[in-house]
Image (cartoon, rainbow, N blue to C red; front, side, top):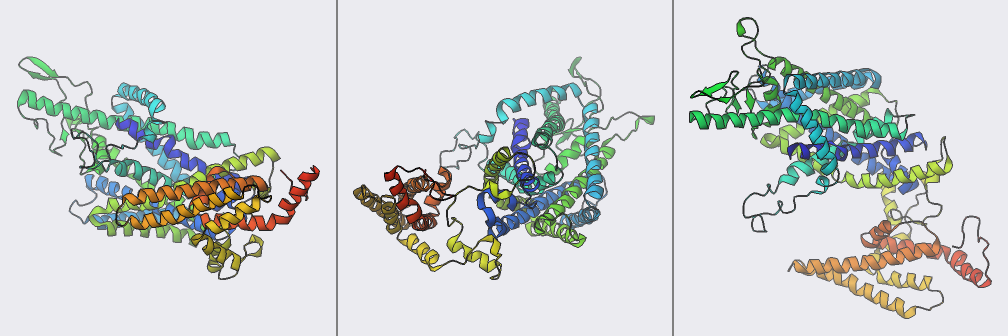
Length: 640
């Protein structure tokens, strides 16, 4: 179960946000000539509004999220680095841990700053290759010195389980019954997982991965120019998953095997020596010295060592998880060997190289993150002053320091919370990016190779007032201090926009009847329009009243939501009908979102559109229908 759960987070599910981000940003930049920023991925959805306050919000959130994600990794890595250096005697174990953490963070930040200033092809590239090479060396040495055939078996077995269960079943596993608290229906046999398990593991890890999406995705996009989608998918999705399967099958398998052997030695001491601590190591109560010779009791061999040299083996200490890696490294001790039989083992060498590798990994994470954040802050420009890179590198170090210091004894919790707060909401951005990728690929198929005008991604006909326009345009004037780029086509909200929004917010049934009457020009369905408007009015007043009553009895809230979503269904159906009448592209999901949580804007949008096209489309359309004329009314508008 442990390898399965691990590979669920480190496999396709973990790398998919990076792939989506990389492909959407790269297509927008290299095929449609847009800046290499996050906002460009949303151009098929928001159009020129991407260059306004909406795009600013998207990029700003991406910057904050990237800094939070990198700082989480930097903070967690700092804790493990401190543990390893203490194990090697480089740090006094009685030193103040917070002070040590801060020093390590700023040493890494200093190296990261030098790396990011040197540029992509110098410091970042060299350190990345060095870190990857050292990681592969540790992996290979551990594989050869440990029980290799067991690890190969585990790799094959884990890969099969991953392909069978982890792609579809485990990603949808939410531990629903395990999440119940006592008194809510929790299992009475006390065998359920801790109710906090999903938050500890799944939610945190997936939010942490997503918080790196902008950083990793844009970095991949930047180095993927002139590559095919196939090569990006293989390099960003398939290859990392395959490497993760190998790494965690080998290193995780070593840890699990050693824990099982430690439990075996504990039981051996209990059964034959009446002492569970008989083989306990002097280093820790969780570690056990593996006998290098056969253990014989009453002439019977009760233990045979088939893997000499690997000792001690340790169980997991939940209160000191940062030591788990170094417990494995120190197990390669090979006692009794060397000149005089006093060979110190490979523990110090393996731990030392692990610390160097870990430091390089976090230096490259910090410098790459600083480079990407700097690119975002410069609206996609690839060339910018080196002082900006220094600023962002130091910002990441300062934020990581603040989280660790402010977190105190719960520093880990503070780091995890930072990733969850900023990473989880970004999932909605990724959903929209998937639609954008589809739209961009469709446009490329229609217009062939070469550079393509980004406006060709937009629908041929859209609403005169987008849902995010109208009264919301005031935000653009505020954030730009009244100096709005005229090319954006963003106008200051008129009295129609402002009064219409608040009228629709409070009395939405009035514009609803007006819209129904407008599309029923011949008056054939007047009674139906009145009934529909009446039902909407009752539900609208009802859900407000029921939510108020929910403060007295929460059961009323359920009825309130029912009335609210019934209204949403009515308005969704109406918007789909209006779109069909006017030939405006769209989809059910967009109509439902507009008809539910954005209903004032949706009603105003339909009112203004019908008023704009009243003569050109509806009146002339009826006349042309009567004359059986199929000629286009205008060069851009056709009667469906």
